[in-house]
Structure formats: C-alpha cells, structure tokens
Length: 341
Image (cartoon, rainbow, N blue to C red):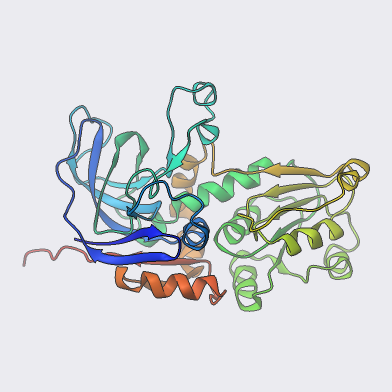
C-alpha cells in the first residue's frame, strides 16, 4: 500500500510499504477514507521536535472504515465508519486516572508513537475510535479531531459579555471562530496576515475581520472592552501584538504551536490581570465535536482549502509552510474500493 512516512527533520517520503497484518488484541484495522494535514504535522516535519521513531507514517486527523477486529474488541464492528482520537495515553499515571488524558505523563500522538492516517490502511487501538454517521461526508468526518481541539480552546475561555478576538485563521483559529460564532455573547473578531484566508473565515462564520491594532479593534467593538482572545498563530510577533490590543482583565487561550521563546515582562500580566491559558489538544471534547459534525457540515466544507492525494503530500507541506492557502484545511482523499456492478 502507499503511505507518507517521516524519516527525519525535513524528510517525508511517499512510498509503497507492506499492508498491515491482522490487528493485535484490542486493536482495529481501518481502510483510511480521508485525513487532514495539521499544523503540528508541519511543525514536526520542519523541526523534528516530536520524532520518536523512524520512519513513521504521519497523520492524526483521520476517518476510516473498520475492516478487521483484534481479539476482545466489541466497541466497534466491521463496516463502521469511525474517526480517531489523536491522543495516545498510558491510562495509569495520576493525570490519566483523574480523567485528564490530554495531560498524560507519557502522552504521545497517533502518527508519532504509532503509524497514522497518511496511508491507505491503518491499525489503531479500539479505545481511540469513535463511530460516526455512515452518511457523513468523509471530508467533514476528517475534521472531527481539529474541531475538538478548537472546542477545548473555546471552553477554556471564561464567559464574557463582550467580543472575542481570534488571532490566526488557520485550521484551529478558523474552527474556533466557527464555534464562537454560535456561542459568543458579543462579536467575533478575526485577524490574520493572510487576508484571503481571513476573509474566507469571516464570510463563512459571520465574524468581523480586523487588523491587529487597537484603533481597528476599538472601531469594531464600539470601544467596548476586549476581554477574551484565542491565540492560534504560534507567532511570537503576533502574540506580542495581541497583548497590546486586549484590555486589562482579559484571558487568552493559547492554542498555537510556537516557534521560539516568549520575552515578556511578567509585570504586564500581573498589573493588568491578564490570564494566559494553555490549551493542549483536547480533554473530553471529541464526542461533542463528533455530534456537531452534521450540523456544521456546510461551513466545514466551505472552509476546506484543497483536496489532494497521498502523492501530493510533500509538495503540499512545502506550500503550506510558506503560507500559501486561502482555506483552513487540506484534506487527503484516499482511493476508494470500486463497488461491483
């Protein structure tokens, strides 16, 4: 079968490999239907930060169809359409026992500690799989995992009566704007240096596109305080700009993957009572995200940037790393079996 495998920093190869065999006890074999490229996939390719085995088949945002069950699996059945939880937790540490699997002491991710979804077939633990409606578009199903990440970030923010600013209209920022457009009490503002992408997110979600400066935001909010924001760029420069436009008493949900280190005066946070809220993956939001997929199918499809095949992944990585996208998500579509006449 064909798979996209990461060998090392900057070394991603699409190649033919052996199909996975029959799954072990507790594991499930899937025909992968579609997968999404995540910013963390690009970060790992660019930096090698999370490479723990080589080669490894990348891809943790995936949907597929169950084709074989290992011994003892009774939570899914052959033929089920499923999406995968990306988190590979131990289940034994204090955080896991407390229900905080996303903070597991030895947390890894699909596509890192085990092979992921950038392949025609995959084998995953049954505990990670969630059944989805068989009629759901596979492109939409592949967005369940990033939707859960965005939902976790949105839920980390305190409820405020005013506007919310989302900085960064990539996959997580755009999905956060979509969720906030349905739940925020005030206006949803979006900012991104990629103007075409920002405009698309604003159009699909009903958010207001703004420049990341105080005057523009004051005009958009009629000078009301801005007390909540989502930082989804991972850009040190954008984060520093954000601190300059939010008001005292604000909370910032930080979900971007940063390149570099912050250099800020902590007195700024103390004196202005600004809360920085780290948002790592998701907690228990994936089932809720799965339930939302049907209702959100229209806007999710409208936010897709491109659909590609496995052979296109290396070139797509290079394109995305240079910021060349007008939508949120690139979806990899797998060859589907031909139904007998």
